[in-house]
Image 1 (cartoon, helix red, strand yellow):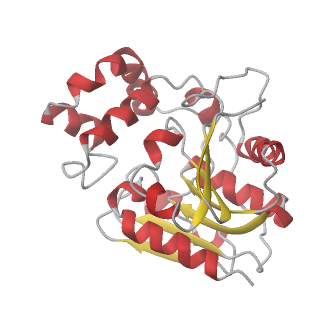
Image 2 (tube, one colour):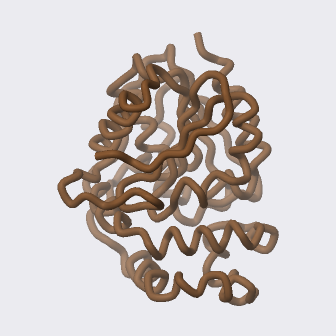
Length: 263
């Protein structure tokens, strides 16, 4: 399977992996331009997300998606890379570091999924209904996101700074979410799983969570004992589940700093 990808900048490779129901174009616009001044940045659309078609024969659990990303690296002749991923993309990045350490220079997890003691076992009504609603309305995102009430309904749980986010970001996010054929398969792929694998300490790892993450709250989904023992753990003030939107400069700085810790 060939995933849609975007490449910008020059330098040491950095791979960006978005989260479930997101896309390359909607996840990274606030941090990609600056990162492209330091790295050759490659971002992929996961199966059934963004411009990548959904293949029903593609396993959608995080480890299988990690294998798929390695295949894309081989296709693009990327021998090694730094990784930064949000939510599911953060979990996939950690899986790659655990299973393919020779391909990974560093990992920055931006609110990574999988760090829970008790794995999920089923879809929640709220998550499923919001996706169904988005699928029915995303074609009208341009008009809807002009209305403050619609922006609030769509994003106040995701970002404590939803009022400050550029409208273009919100429009692209709604379109990505509503059109994501891979959303439910990716969600199902996380059931009965968590990330609890070792990562060698020669690979720098930084984990960032927002202090207002309602999607992966600290009480249930930010278990530090599951992260690599050598990982740096950072909590960002006034940031939600998409810290690259709420705290773009801090995320940029931490991705660059993590890359400099390479032994």
